[in-house]
Length: 258
Image 1 (tube, helix red, strand yellow):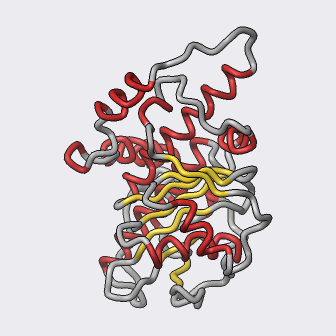
Image 2 (image 1 turned 60 degrees about the vertical axis):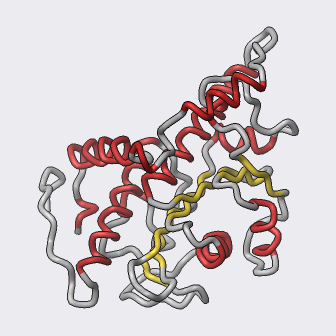
């Protein structure tokens, strides 16, 4: 397949058509992250539940960069970390701990995303956390939780504390670590994470400038969050945005369809 070839091979024998569609959407989203620069060598993860009765989910193969992820090389695992699909690669234990905890215990967390963007990690290191002082953060009133830094997330006992920190929020700032979102769909999780990351970008630049940051009243912040429609399933919950970005990926390199 050439980079411009947008044809999609049929699902392999070991994969149902429903799972193959899920793999295609997730692989495309990894390429979207690559285009956006939301990458950290071979680290960070987007996970997505596989349709079916078992709580299985797909994760990136540990050892590949996001622009190397394809539909067929995504790794299917269960909640114990057992690999259920053909794979030449292992999974990252740190990613498994975080993502499996959420997939197991949050019923509508069909997709979980975690990044170490410079802006996101910078705000995660700020004592004040996210400031509700710009257009994007004002859309996230009462939507962001915080989890204290405990080191590299490779210990199962942290799962319960992470879930307790997150509560019923869909966005989590991992202190001194990065950003996390979960959503009912992959597009929903993306819309949430994009907005939080954009808010962090503006905050980091604003903090680097001389002068005081203009405040936004609590009343205005609450109203802005109420009026923001991009997270609502009734208004697509980010589907049109993600679809547009996947079209951009297809124009650049459609090899994720393999």
